[in-house]
Image (cartoon, rainbow, N blue to C red):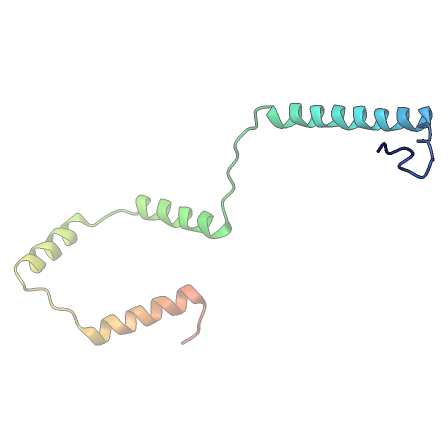
Length: 110
């Protein structure tokens, strides 16, 4: 048994050449755009670095710390006292200094 006229006897309509040409032109345009973008993206990029404000402030503090003179005589005296077990820490004074430092850092008035 042969099957004829599957689509109800209607023949396929002829494609409009103008529409086909438009679609081909659009496809070519899209391909050219993709090629241009590939050229742009494959071009070597230059690296860049940007620091946050916090990082910049930290860098400034580190520079100041490196530029600050060190009283080597006092450092040696403290090292010797620590090694000999003669150095004593007053916890109340230490706690007060830590509290004051935190207040300065975070802008809290005590």
